[in-house]
Image (cartoon, rainbow, N blue to C red):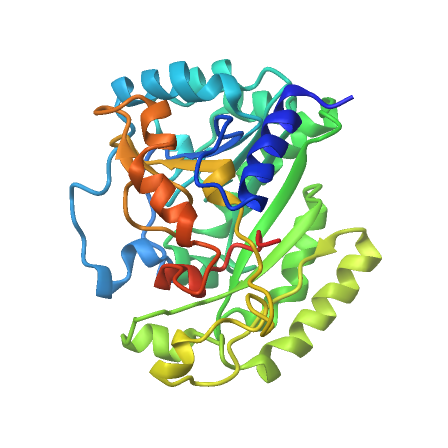
Amino acid sequence: MWDSFTIRRKMNSFSRRMGWTWAPAKPYRAWIVATSRCNLTCKTCPAHAPVHGTDPNYFTDMKPEVYERVKRELLPGLQIIHLSGGGEPFLTPLLDQMLDDMADGRRYITVVTNGTIIRRKAIERLVRSPSLIRVSFDGTTNEINQAIRGVKLDRILEFLRTVKEFADRGVHPRFLFQVSYVVTRSNVHQMTEAVEIAHRYGVHEMCFGNFVVDDRKDEYAMRESLFGCPEEVTPHWQRAHDRGRELGITVWPMSFDCKERSEEERRQYKPDLYDGERIRQCPLPWWSVYVEVNGAVKPCCVYHWPLGNLLEQPLREIWNGPKFRALRRIVNTPAMPEVCRSCFIQERL
């Protein structure tokens, strides 16, 4: 028997398959940016890249009046909630209230954290709920992690130790513990040791990712990124993967950009997006919303342009308003927005 979340998702999926721009049910999944502030300035983070500058207005917490709209109009229908979006979620003053409202056993909550702020009540709530905690570190020594992330590894290990402490006392069957590790020239040789550290603290999955520089041309990015160098990374990844199998940790695969592409090549469909006959379908404009700290609403974390604002319109008007419907009309056609052609979210059907 389907639950209400599945029924609503299938209703909107049927609308997508029929080519309709109207979504009959509310979104069942949301990214809720609790804060865009972060207490670190990691060298690999796009939010702090030199090319983006530092707009002081960008780094702020979600306004209480925005969260009240989220709680009233969006939260009742959500099955999956991502409390992440570029900032450090354990910084937000609203975190305890959000978990009180969300961690009811019916919803799945994901939190991506830099592991430097320990709020024991919040960690315990997550461990006891259907949830995912993903902690980031980028080196297996204090020196390398501090050089990349600006903080010693010991501080992050204390966070991992706290999660393990609560998990050892009793964990929800659907709790998932992950570690994220951005591979650079400085830390690629430590990948296997990173898996061993993760195992020590009861981590279930190890997520190695590339340092994707996009438009960055600064000396650090040019020196440290191995995104176009699979021959340098793959042997280290293979050893880490094999060690993970020995220890019972899933090690995610990595993807690479092996060739420098011309501007014309960049405008073409990704091979995994278009096979010459059929465009793989993106369901997110029918399934999800991304709510910024200021109330701006987008369909996902990749699409940059707001389609409405909760402080100006009710969600129902935004969700089936002209901007959302215009995006649904083109997102799965050759006229899709440019940003959708290089989307990194593995969601297309």
